[in-house]
Length: 251
Image 1 (cartoon, rainbow, N blue to C red):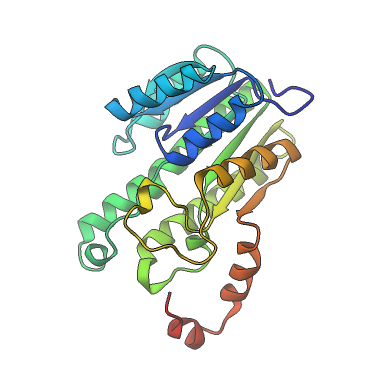
Image 2: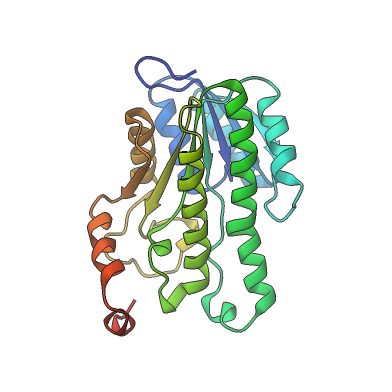
């Protein structure tokens, strides 16, 4: 369980090879050794990440998880909780997609929606059932400021993040009083392998900064965090701009 100082003993990373997931594990390992459950596809990247975290002091168990497989969320959750309680679970998988292709390819849109929305909400449901049964735990969901108001440049991706954000916010409310809580994390542009090759957006951040916000958010019992914090005020303005003005912005 999470101790009196807020340090966790077991951490489940769903989409465990993402830069943010790895940075979160490393941030927790800076405080104490812990058990990390690495849920991801069986790839050389998963093997490398498991080795890196073991070298950093973690006990690592790998769990198969493929967001394209509808049966994967339940199977992954069964395997992750089989060996004991999970203190914190980070849902950190997703795809950006090719915005140009997504404007005209309905199959690509459906694929992105399955990976970015259907799979995360199925995972959240499975995690909530098991954490409610154990009586404690925190589910951390990686949302995005892109979900605050869909922009023409990436509206399909933004719509999936809007759905994930709404689901996990509602899930957190539904778990009130159960001992389980949900932290929704809304980063801006993160310099990571997912955004490699893209120009930085204003207030660009790093996986390490997101990890720090996750650790602090879990420790302080927050339900929502923005990374960087200034994005909260930027998006508040953008959210309330009249639509004719919003459409004219170069974003």
